[in-house]
Length: 191
Ligand code: AMP
Image (cartoon, rainbow, N blue to C red; front, side):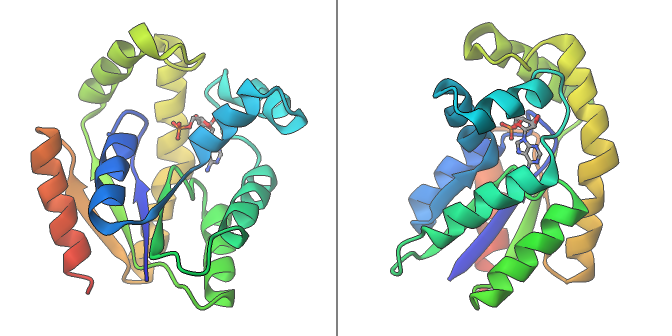
């Protein structure tokens, strides 16, 4: 079973690369951002609460996210090949909760892939995405806030996985295809 975490600053290409990973390795894609946007679209209590944090570029509180992911992991079919976690964990507290959850069901994390992209390129990509995404958080002010939050809260998650010897940095600049070649080689070298 492959349990892969794809992590990196907003705009690093996590979603695009997750789709390619799903296709090649037949994994189940769990994106906390997508799950939250679905809740927002359906105007659920969780969605309405989460939207207040998301629109300001802040992280949604850990416990809300941990509960959401625990439910999603527990709902996986028995014959699942593995998961690709996209946008989670984003704090060390979330990483600790995830490791406890996956170890308790004997399906430990395989590797965290850290997609590295320059800030300037991230801002360009997110502003371009904002022209069509309709997302409340793809505007310059919120993008800058999200990059700050990333450095402060999410970058330490990389150290957590480095200490577990489950970390691979991936150069995230260049074409989608070239980046995917690097990702596939990092995944294959865990086998
Ligand atoms: P994303 O689509 O992954 O960029 O997520 C969009 C927004 O959803 C983030 O800026 C956060 O406000 C919120 N979010 C997504 N995943 C998490 C998470 N693991 N922890 C806290 N907030 C999250």
